Length: 381
Ligand SMILES: *Cc1c(COP(=O)(O)O)cnc(C)c1O
Image (cartoon, rainbow, N blue to C red; front, side):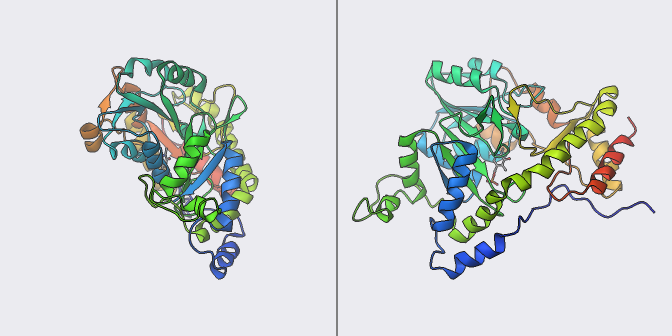
């Protein structure tokens, strides 16, 4: 009898100390935001992402919303971004009345195509938002040069990329701001959570206010002012300290969470190389100088039928594989609030219909991975 026990696509990992830390947080008086665990987790995030400072948030979505506030976007302002991303990348700016301008991705890394950015810039453009897809860096030297030339801000949506780097510089430290996700499907998680990483002292100071309902409460708690007041627009973006406690337990074991993921990623890539190369299947491209944190392993199938076919073939073996982003530019809200840049989004449309992500999580066993690999190799191409 073949083993048909289910292999999920992702499984949230417990590093060990989460519940003890959560208990500790609840049994202390510090159950609201910005307690001792928030300080610990924040320091670890800043170290990994390489910013001058960071702030824990309730999600990456909220961190993105904070970047939109920090950019002082006004209705009609434009923000250049890929269409091949999660809805929050665009929604955060649309919420401010800004227009997401969708630029195509590169066919190799599936990252924003830096060669098509300049043609999409207008006198309303305020920022470029990049997504390091699968934690593989965007061509940041070119992006930063274009941003400098036109005076634009650069935001990194680094939801996939914590721990990755670009020519030795951590992902998250390259733009003025970066956002992290600690959603249960990400490498490091606390169920729902995120962070905003800042690389500019003025932005950090203002972000602290925006995150605390537009008040200088953080300064008040540090004894820098004698009462706190409403000084800017903002909202409530800080997580309760018990959630930060959970996250601290994960961040402290970052290397232990990562090591199995990296081996699993490499094993997929080696075991599937010959098959992929001889059947018109494309494996992930990792350009020189890019270190990625093994957030996902994907294949680009030769056709849309083969995308659906491989997912169904694995499903018969009780293995869950997944497609990924449905392009934003042709989604109902994308059409309403955004627009497509002059280069179109042809690659986005194609890869969205070809991409299959394989199960990848810290606890995936060698036997389970062997079943996934067998499943892929037995797909009739
Ligand atoms: C997961 C993800 C988000 C949203 O993260 P949340 O923490 O769930 O808000 C945003 N952008 C990208 C690229 C993501 O993968």
